[in-house]
Length: 639
Image 1 (cartoon, rainbow, N blue to C red):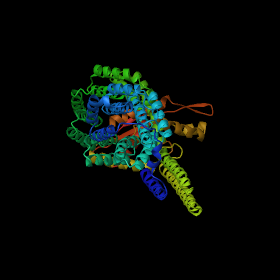
Image 2: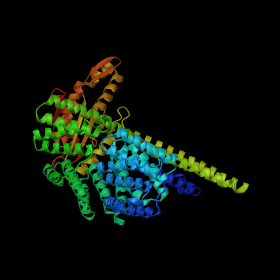
Image 3: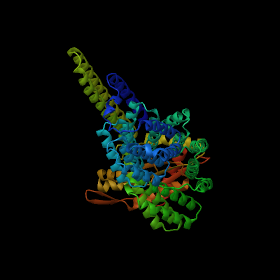
Image 4: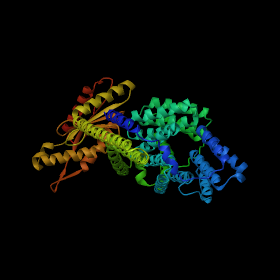
């Protein structure tokens, strides 16, 4: 439904923009205000050659630039040199050679390029991207914003589009995907006006990742495939590697493991065409993650070992931490506890150098692995404390992500509206200038056209907004329990049927948990129905903190709840149920200055060859719940 609403609103906006564009002047006419750079005429040809080489492979462009400087530096003026060093810094950053990139930046800055020139803005963006890769998020953001400001003041729309693109990448890397999409949208509109199909293809790769992190898999995969198709059509195999790699990770996040494997194998094939061993190694790392998520530890270790054999230098703290955590998970699965602890300790040393608010998902995974290690060492108290930390981070992150998903369309809508408004204002400015040279009647006609277009744009905008608001409200009412905000019985059961069908098709695990509040009637009788509602809402929030991102939890009766666990075995479901039971036992609900203590009973059932329909599994869980009640309540019983 969300994707359909998005497509509907996008179609209406395209119609509005199509009408408006009839009176808009091309953006390139305004870019005369760009801060000038005086280059030697022969260098302009060299810069064009560099641009073509960079399309094929930044390594080729870097090699050409270094040879050009060695051969002809005595013929270059300072502007030529600064621009050349800025380009070499950029190519090095693309190739992950951050130390060398920093040297070129420092050299270029000694030549004092004009502050708001394209060269100076490029240096700011490259420096910021190095900071970003090294985990210096605050320093990076300051430079990105400075570059954006200078590009706006100089009316350099290409540099402004680049600034928006870098800002989008920054927000995506730092877990603010909705802000990332807003800036991708701004950049996309500018590059579209400039007619730069190559930059649009680069943007689609980055946008693909952000949409994937917002669980909009359809949009994410579409963008990655469009970029891949463009690069392959133009035989840009180095860039195709990026697109294919992004597509593989989209499938991995979607848990489409077979498609993810196929995509990573294609990365290996493309890396041979591009003669790039780094991406062969990255493909092996990706395959290790796929098999690890698919619970095939032996194959995951096999590909992780192949990745390590390439000895590719890992020069960003995020990549270093993720490698250590992946190694730790492999060791834990093989019960190599000492080796796992060493890997976790190494990851922690790097994590402490990063800003926690920008690495929530990594910290959650870190705490989960430490909890698993503590459990294997029979240190359950430590494990419980670490799990609580992980769940708290997960709750914060998940709540944020849910809010982002709800507001995503609204943000994109507002962004498009702001861009349209800016275009109309720019149009009015240009038309007023032309009107001074035309007859009075021609000026009147032009102003009338502007007014009509503006009125039509506002009318369509208002209509789209109302439609979005109404559709989202109806969808929420149809699928949500009004008291707890969880899925209602109808929606929970329909999702269960869907996940069960998928599980049987791919021969995967499937489990459910039923639970309810013990002696709930006593709560209502002693404290009142308002207190009972407060208890149900508090228990709903608590339970959400102990389930996985793709699990479904719903309220199916008065005090009865159902948790659907696709891919979970009976043992995994029992562990989740036991954690919720323990946390419920510790829960204190406050209502009208009264403290209420509750417990809950749990029934667990799973997919077997004997019970294949959801109704059979549900009945088994109900029977198990009844047995838990019969055995004294505050228990977990599995069938």
